[in-house]
Image 1 (cartoon, rainbow, N blue to C red):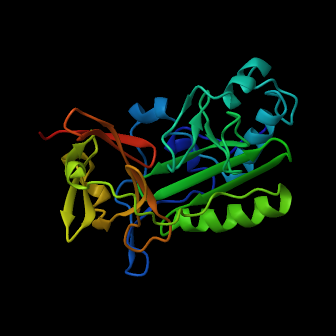
Image 2: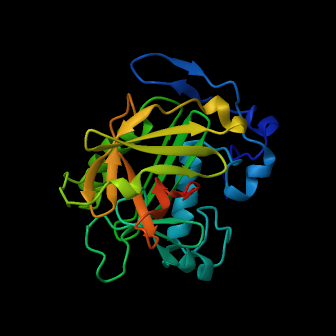
Length: 277
């Protein structure tokens, strides 16, 4: 592909400029992450490649060119590049992505998905204390990459992507939805939800939902996200903002049982299963 700095192992990356993640709350002090790299067992999830932004842009351009890299190498087949942008499933509304293609996230920044199309594709990625963003707009040929290693990365991404894509493509990421009073009964949402790495506890106090997310023992280095107050933005849909961050996180309560209690809590791009009765 003509990208010599693209690496998958620490001993390869150390030959180039590298960054390490930072943990903590912006404005209250950040510390260097005690874990620099994720284990190689995370490779199938795409958590081991390391590259400077310019190399990722080169990869994005190859996807726009039918899988052909700028150096003429056929990186992946043209058929595969088509599958990358073809929706394989839709995601709950208001999350960090709208749909999923073959190894890619899909977004519709026009705010109207009635025709089932998506105008932007790419991927986000996070390790401990780092966050990366890739956005590709095929119609205008715009490819943007942002790599952050601590602080309010999502806030920076929202600002940067809005400015660049507004100027080059006439589209921009959707902004935070306005609060809506749906008249939902909030009691059924209260409970404990869990996935391998975290547990979310939802409580109701003075008519408002609050969620506290705690990492499991093997993920303790991530630290507690603190308590988040939730605002309703639709039926079964809420948003909340982590301390020190500027961008809200979605919380969707899905698949209610016969008692009206949701079986799942969907936040970001991951689902927590209800674990209490």
